[in-house]
Image (cartoon, rainbow, N blue to C red; front, side):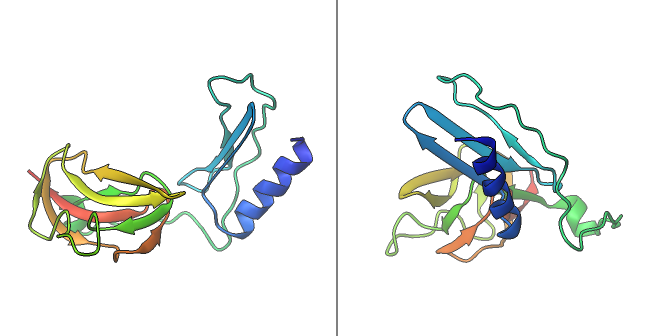
Length: 157
C-alpha cells in the first residue's frame, strides 16, 4: 500500500464521518483513527511488523465545528457516561429472548457487563469499568454506535 492509497482512505474517512479504519493483509496492518476532538488520523503498525509509513497530517477540521465553551448543567456534573470503546452494533441483551444486561436503576461495578457490541461478526461484551447506578440508556438495541459514543449515563457511588 502506498501513500496515495492511504490518502484516499483518509479522504473517505473525512467524507463519511468515519472515526476508525483498520485493514490487515498478509504481513501488513494499518489502523487509522480520528481523534475525538476532530484531530487527524493516527497510524499504528501492528506489533509484528515494522512501520512502513510515518504519516501525521494536519488536524482535520469538521465542517461547521467551532470550539465553544458550554457551562455544564448540574446533571452533567453529577452523571458520568459509559462510552463505546469501538464501532459496531449495540445490543442490550445477549439474545433477543434474554433479559437486558442492565436497566435504569441497576447498580454496576467495573466488571459488570452492560451490553454487547458486534463488530465484524464478533460479539464483544462491554464492561461498565465504573462503579455507579445507571440513570439513563442512551442507545436503542440493534442500532449502530461510533467509537466514544455515550451508551449509558450513570451516577457514581
